[in-house]
Image (tube, rainbow, N blue to C red):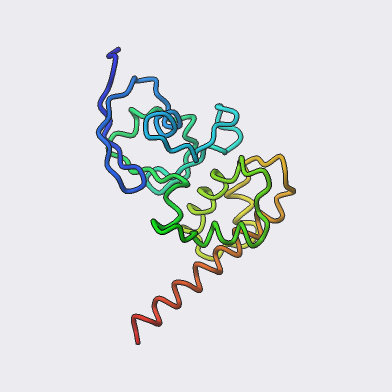
Length: 170
């Protein structure tokens, strides 16, 4: 097996051309090589969901994927949500407003799972959210505020889209 393999990967809109060990996990690449510490490592077995990122538009447990598998892929992490000026994404605002966070350890994975869901289902109902985030564990909440947060984010995003469309017509 080679000592290093070349991986060309786009992370949060920035293309990276890297040499990594074949056994390097995506979570380790993000945290150690790219200094994106928002992706949390909990169980390191794909059970807790804290390391969830979006790979090519699919929510993915970054602790289960080798970086070398992702040559040519696009990855979005929690750092991609807020705007460059610090303006929070509607998902982040909704989690704050609806008290969907506690200690914050599971939050990045919840946010990215919610983001992927809202891209597929713009205004999800409770069952959609529970199914999409069912594999993300939170030890601090009863999940009620998390589910409410995701539904609120869907409404915020729908309102924003409607406003933008109205401005274009005007």
